Amino acid sequence: MMIDEIKKMSPQERLIIMEQIWDSLAEENQIPESPEWHKGLLESRQQRINSGQAKFLTLDELKRLKSV
Image 1: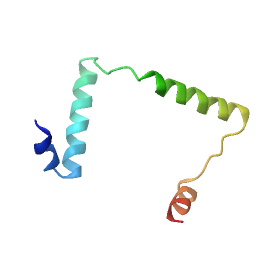
Image 2 (image 1 turned 120 degrees about the vertical axis):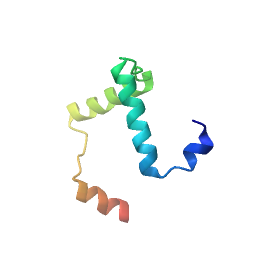
Image 3 (image 1 turned 135 degrees about the vertical axis):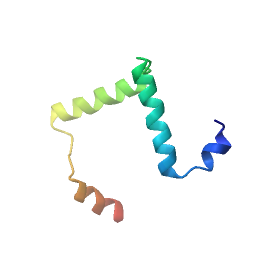
Image 4 (image 1 turned 180 degrees about the horizontal axis):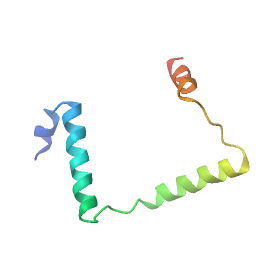
């Protein structure tokens, strides 16, 4: 499938294709490892949680912030 064909698809169709691709990778045990920068980001977020510096928002709070 070429990018031009993908661009013609609806967002819903694209999501279905992505899910099918991930499912096929999982079935074949071929899921790639996360890049190192992902691991670094997760570690820094975990440190903020552990130190009490992280602030958690409810979904409603986040929606209000995004609408401002």
